[in-house]
Image: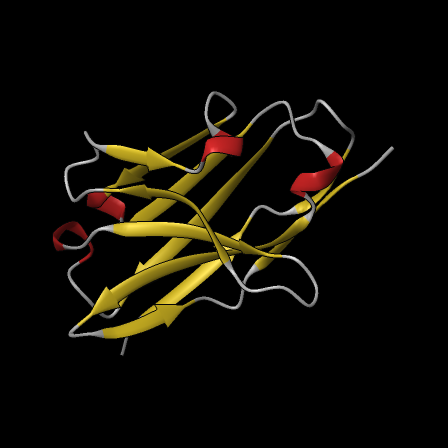
Amino acid sequence: QVQLVESGGGLVQPGGSLRLSCAASGFTFSSFFMRWYRQYPGKERELVAAIDTTGRNTYYADSMKGRFTISRDNANSTLYLQMNSLKPEDTAVYYCHVMRDGINYWGKGTLVTVSS
């Protein structure tokens, strides 16, 4: 079955950086668009970034442009999110996502806390 396991979250000071990873299994990773979402307490998940199957085409939400970089390693079925210049408002749980056969799959998320 599809499994997505996020890691790399933690506590970081404003202006700092983190790199999130998502280990994928149970499907042909290289054949699917992948996405990162985040969720604030009490809010709906919002799209952070997306990447096509080749890794050559990416999309970012406006507030993340220039600070976040999504990438993928198809050989190792891993999705990444490099986050730089982090702000307190980036504090959220970050989720890896794939849609397969019309079904949304999510990992359990990794918590990112930006605070001094």
